[in-house]
Amino acid sequence: MEKFPKYFLSLFILVIYTNLQAQVNCNAIEGENCKKACEIYNNSGSQGSKKSQENFDKAIALCPTFADAYMEKSVPYLKRGDFVTWKKLIDKAVELDPKTHLGYRGWCKFQFLRDYKGAISDIEALEKIYPTGYLGYSANGDYELHIAKAICYSALGQKEKAISIFEKQLVKEDHNVGFYDYYQLGVTYFELGKYDKALENFEKQSKYNNFAENIYYKSKVAKIRNKDYLDLKKLALKSYDEGKNMTDGYTHHFNKVYRTQIEQL
Image (cartoon, rainbow, N blue to C red; front, side, top):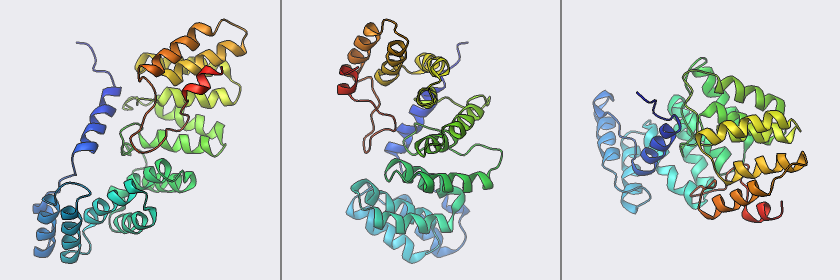
């Protein structure tokens, strides 16, 4: 039987994250007030609505140690750009339940704040809790958190360290390749002038998920080597116009390429 493409798992995670608030098993919670708080949380209403925020407040008042309520209450502030309020709430959630919320906070530091050091700190703290295991995915489903950490090191200019983390994660048998894993590794190699390794990873990326940015970098390698690159440039532009490019509903992707950059190649 044909193997289900690994990158579809990331799409599944993204759909779940986008449409559903995580439900909690209230029967596993001790204390009558905390059980009531959990029930209120599970029936809080649409994310970001006045009703849901009021219900999270009720849940917190009943059970001040109920971490999920702080986390979910924080999300609308993050999406609206009120990072000060978001941080107060998410920090409380992490304090109460680091296993569950460290990875989310770390990812958001990367995605929304470009706080690469803060993101690395949170992901590495999570690694201490799960030293040999799976850390989970970014909130948008694009990256496993080891890969996200590698991107952060790349962003800080520590390219060789980033490559080491990328490659160690990508060879794991249980790693599900994300939408942009090999692309990010390829760009890191490209920035070091290691064009053979860069192209190798752009070609691998093409087999999972080809898109304008990946094709653009392949054309850049061809141009540097004085080879015909115009067909690749045209394909990159075509892919971009067809919507086959790196998009995010709230922020800009790391190593995102824009149409004007492709045109100017």
